[in-house]
Length: 89
Image 1 (cartoon, one colour):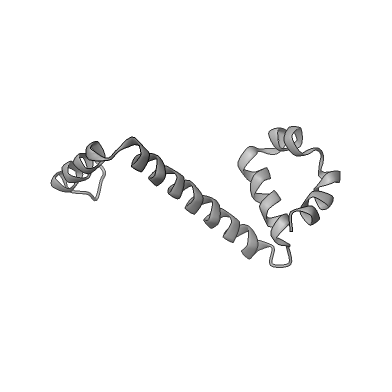
Image 2 (spheres, rainbow, N blue to C red):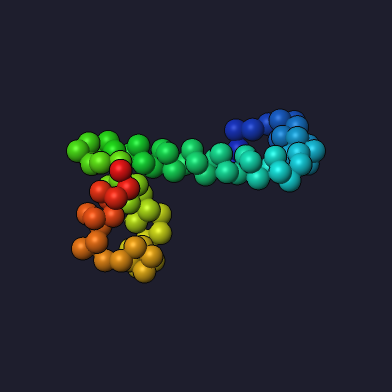
């Protein structure tokens, strides 16, 4: 990687740490990173929509995460959104 702020020595140390990790630990780190990203995205949604309920924020994240087409396949049309949002609280 040419445009990195990580020194080659530091990169070698990190690579060695990952090589020594169990698959379970690697999976745990991936899950935690995913959860952090989700929480960060939901915080952004909350900042842009301070009046939204927790259920509405969750559905907005799901819609953003899945895309509109898959969201509508999984959750139905936007007509059902208000009912689902109130059920999620």
